[in-house]
Length: 576
Image (cartoon, rainbow, N blue to C red; front, side):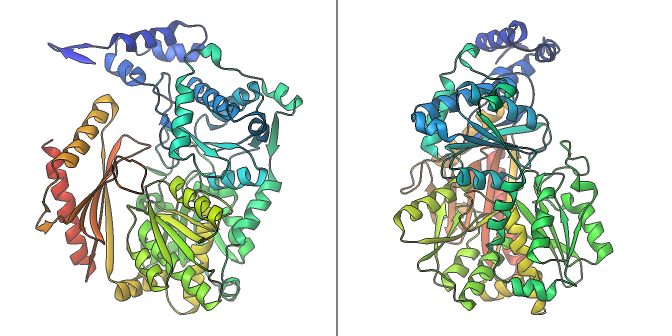
């Protein structure tokens, strides 16, 4: 888009794409009416058509609507045709293994699922579709269980309700790795004409055995695998009668499995927040269905206060992230950060395994480069190796595969600061179902010892130091926003400051050229091994993320450092 003397001139190619979608009879009437309604709105036209919705780190994610830069049945068809072509390039055996598809409760999730299935069937690739919404980690499990070649989850995780997405998984059960994602992206880009897209109606696909519906049988296998990660069933049994858990699925997929898992594990006092137990694509009771935000737990806190609950657990719409609230010494519910929950789980799992004499040879824990160092410090104390990966659980899944193939390390747990955890190897993506089980179990075991999770966290601070973290997100939408984010990253890459506040920067880690890591647009300013600020464009939203981690002798001292550093970064960004 060019602005000349107050007049906006939209690129000719953008206008051509807009006109084609508006007039080509291939596109349905509702789509064309939506585009006619924005005629003359150059900025809106540009935003919808300046690019094809990018197939990013794990697939597509964007605002639902008409246009090449939106989530709709046409972008779904194109992406699926590209995926089908990539699968077929691996031969008939790969195609015969099929693709598993799951979806959440978002607007058009079921429709997008059926569109993807119809394209795969049109390419003679079998699909396995769940009969209703299911959590993302169950897709990962089912893919492995069925030995499928690939998987798809239609979801936008905890994004606002106007979003949806299309995540792609490969045969190991993890989201597609960088090289595979790039190959699929290239295959999608070769789908230049809608005439290249092949489809088959659902009825015909079922008749030809190219579509199979998955239901409770797969649920049972998945839940059995999750329950197999429990470490202290005796602790649950001893506390079951009096220990109360309030759970909220935030209108998402966890509503079907988390309460059932907790009850099957032995918890008798599981109280589900009723309004948020109803799947709702508008997430009408919350501003954002994000378990990272305390506001999302307002109704759950009210219920917990009424019931005098010991613990609150919440999962995001697609059931791969989990948040927990615990009582402090004043009896108020406090949100545990993703880093705090991760550190508590590391301590609980390693302590329990050591006491039960079930630590395997060469145990391994994997975390991301923007995750707190406290969990790593705890693991080190137990003699357990810790590895760092880039942000994104697919990289953790890749390490599981790497060591399974070599047999020289045993994966115990992976986690990331954004409330994602996996214990065990039955799945290859973060799993809020298993995390909810182990958080509840951990809280019950500590209660048996006369402690809350808040007490346990303070004890970790006392033993290892006060580790604290923060995250600041700057939203920059549209083409101009993308260009602004690029300018900011280039600035810090080429003109890195010497200090943040009064604290010197010791080293700079540029993950576009870090050895032993795939190239990634991430910059980490290191004040020390355990203290840093990291800048990273989001892979799923139009945001620049600023992560910061610090260690101190007290919460106040540590938080003051974090505030200094983030304030300084924001001042620099304001001048770019």
